Image (cartoon, rainbow, N blue to C red; front, side, top):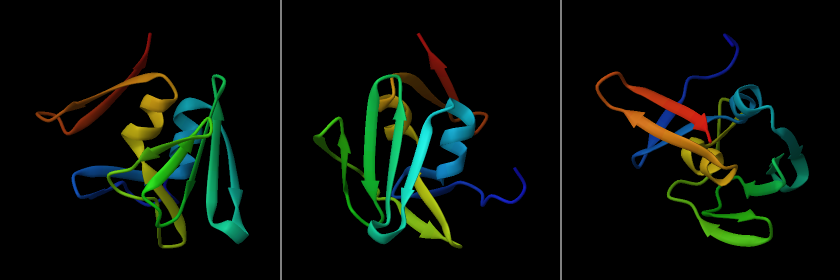
Length: 105
């Protein structure tokens, strides 16, 4: 969508707008403004992550993030690969085309 910011690469990690996760996967997204925390739910899994924190919670288990979620232009940007892999998708970077492929078994 034209009104969303472009993905950004931080410390070798691709961050995308939270809304992109919803649009690609159909996951249910909740934003908790007071805590600056996003919850992503799909396929029986729940991921919770907070702006600026390097730990995400997947089904109540802590996981380290290489790059924390952040706000860019008022939009929540989250680590693409981490979220999709935790939701059970296969993620592949095709460097020659600068494309991220997402598939599910």
